[in-house]
Length: 109
Length: 109
Length: 109
Length: 109
Image 1 (spheres, rainbow over the protein chains, first blue to last red):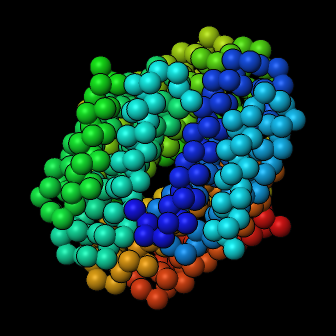
Image 2 (image 1 turned 120 degrees about the vertical axis):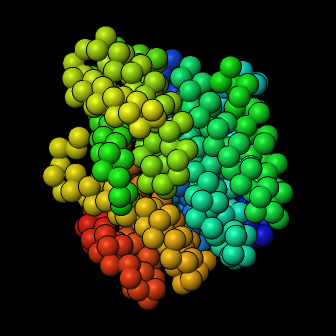
Image 3 (image 1 turned 180 degrees about the vertical axis):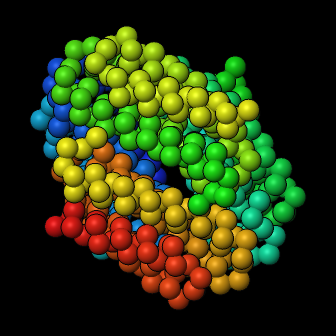
């Protein structure tokens, strides 16, 4: 595990956002239908899950290049949070994305 | 998040084993060298990280086919735990792999 | 790259099926809607993409444990192909899944 | 599959670089040892494999946010190519990384 507590906190937040986006897309969104499976929204959910997963991965590897990945991830999280707010009834996802965006921006600085 | 508490527990254990294998391979093993970077051992560490990551993913998607993935994951975890015991000084990894193997075998049943 | 030509062929087929499932789910299925976003079908598409991606990964790592992953992947491909046939208008996906299932069964033997 | 031929070309180049980095790390580097398993070099190989894999994934999903991921990937590819050149005897990896860096920079523009 990383010796830097800020990095471990960011890994935790990324893996939390990854789990929230993937499971909400695959259960809540698919089962609710309508706006929840609108292509652009659903793609953002899938893209956010992947970005967060990959950011955690680069931090676990322990290379300084995680900064670039965390920066990209923050952009995807911001877009996913905005889309979830617009769709509505996606509070858990909005919160996970906002927390991940903030944490990734710090790691990217 | 899954409504089945056993499944969420297995996801947690898989993501813990994924993190432990990947970070120990990339820090402890690479920095220690010697037996820790012997090809077969290091490949098992990388393979175990991937299998656990993928098992968590299929459970988060929420399809019943996670059983096959969890079954495969249990085999990789068992092999990785045995290799870590032989190399030595890998206790955190042995424990994470054994816990993941047991949890995945239950989910595969 | 693997020295075993059968293994490289299976990696190619897995990465082809991964690409086909993920891109068809994210474009064709989301844009068509209706049966194409029925939860069980869409989950299978996502699960199949992940299984194929992970099988290719274990073969690229070069550990003998890829057999277990390929065996799991064959099951997911078979289920995804059947679901795509039932939904209809998914020929590229049916073919990619059937080819991947056959190749993975050979590697798992 | 993406209808944009430039994007499909970038996906192909990313998946090629992913395969080259992962398989060379796991076979050539681990079997050769010495400088090839020096922590910083090996971490870059693993990070590059993951970044390329994730860039292909976001392009396959088909969201415009792939730009951020491709930009991050180009940085990781550049660093990996430089490290492989320094280590030496890694020509296939240098070429794959340079090609991926160039293609990702175009997609990120």
